[in-house]
Length: 307
Image 1 (cartoon, rainbow, N blue to C red):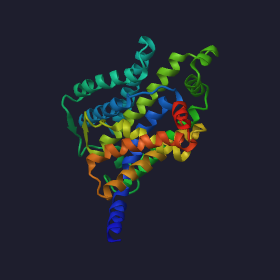
Image 2 (image 1 turned 180 degrees about the vertical axis):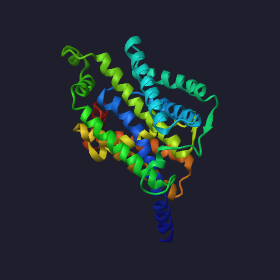
Image 3 (image 1 turned 30 degrees about the vertical axis):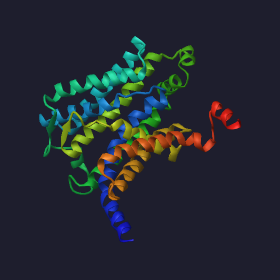
Image 4 (image 1 turned 90 degrees about the vertical axis):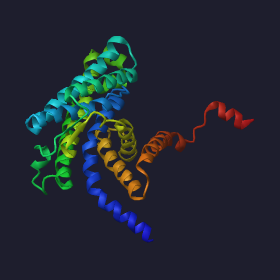
């Protein structure tokens, strides 16, 4: 009983920190969801766009620019990276995953060029999280308020956008590109714009994370894709994906729940190196769960069972 109480106390103590972190990283999950679900475009660019946004923001903050300028530049850089991935796929007929891998690999060198080193400290520089009317600068409460308000704003704007003609065109291309083209929709424009928008959100997350933790690092995106996918699977299991609003809410809900689960594992004494294994197994479980619920057995397996 005492051990359970200790685990619970440790978990509660970590909640504010992990909640703030999850709200920031929810934008990466959003950047994974948009191409994956809205465009049927499995993309790995997020793992490169996340540190890209962080490196761009870090350099500008170190140069004395305002946090808003740093965030705007990160958004533009992420958007360009996503557009390049989509262009490589469309122009050269390269598979989406390979195009994302190529862009992610190239972005590593680009990030090093941007910063001129592997990491950069911006501790003590102005940040967006100092503008919160609640709490003291640097405390988790201020990060929760700012990141939560920004997430709500993005959620509302995206919901309104995907109800417009352009937003509907992106969804139509994801559902059936041939039919969308027959209806006069420019598949190239919708695909490039959609993937660019997704990578912009990943870069936004990176810029916010740099301002939150006080430093930028070229390796800060390592493993972010599998974490984001795990969060997305959790979010979709909770909210569903039948409507646009549910699809957009899933990344935010999933990110919060996933990082609380990570916090619980740490509080229970799980070694940090084992978290990647636990995350991979959890993603596998979430992907296999629908088939397990339906009790589907492959045809060959059914024949063996009959014999």
